[in-house]
Figure (cartoon, one colour):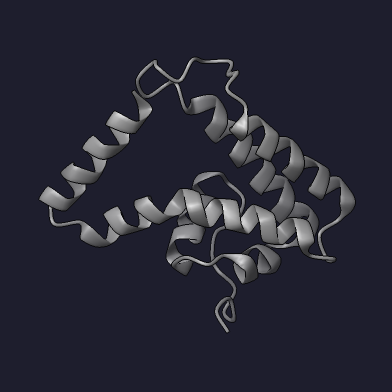
Length: 129
């Protein structure tokens, strides 16, 4: 059901002419997975933050959820809360520069995600080298 909702949102964005936003949404999950993988390998990320990353990866991969995925809108909510908590923790422990450095998507996307989760207001000036 979550997949159907995601497709509906993508189609609506394209229909409204928001193609760039639709592209960002399509790339969000793969880029988030790559971000987590890269942060796990970064020596600047403290071990405690890496433990939280591992927990988040297991949580997101687990078929067991607090709120079943088939419930529209609310189904993916527990996964989003876990991702938000881990990103906030990472920014506090490793710094936003490390997160921005490893983000492979558009800088504006990770800025929006971090702002939404209350982790960061603005991207560092040198976030894309």
